Amino acid sequence: MQLVVARIGRAHGIKGEVTVEVRTDEPELRLGPGAVLATEPAERGPLTIETGRVHSGRLLLRFENVRDRTAAEALRNTLLIAEVDPAELPEDPEEFYDHQLIDLDVVLADGTGIGRITEISHLPSQDLFIVERPDGSEVMIPFVEEIVAEIDLEEQRAVVTPPPGLIDESEAVVASARDAEGEDDGADMDEADEAERAGTAEKGDA
Image (cartoon, rainbow, N blue to C red; front, side, top):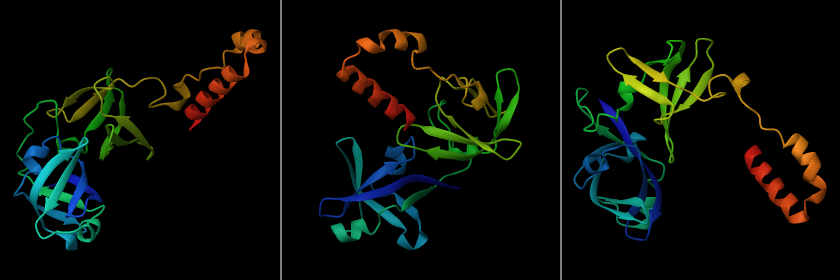
């Protein structure tokens, strides 16, 4: 079975190194020197990792036969794919491979069905479950402890405790602009305070 373990970013320096966006919880195993990885697009690989090091919090890799910045830049946005035994499980019981999570039923704590996981989106800050609902619409659920209470592989389900508005937008709590308080204090605000509040509101809208 094949798993995407990283995406190549921009070239680093002039000697063929590249930054990589890691998509595995086991980079030391999947992205170590000597690892041979398939690629997407396929014609860019396979690639054999020659060296790896961490620089400013980012993993840098150099591949065999990639010796300059031009060759490294040509690999940008390439997905790196490892061959994994389907029976293999992560060492950490709280970690899961994508194939274990795809097609799990997503339910609330009371058993109410939400939908089915169709995709795992790996973002720099967190992973997201892409959940298809019975009506065909999709909802994104962050894979974080505060929201995903349990992954039950035997029952093939993920139990979630979403905050108001995550699943049903009609439940979202919309904060008012301090209605009464704003009316009372508005006249006393100086221009700096107004600018600060305006900036905060703009960031929230974005």
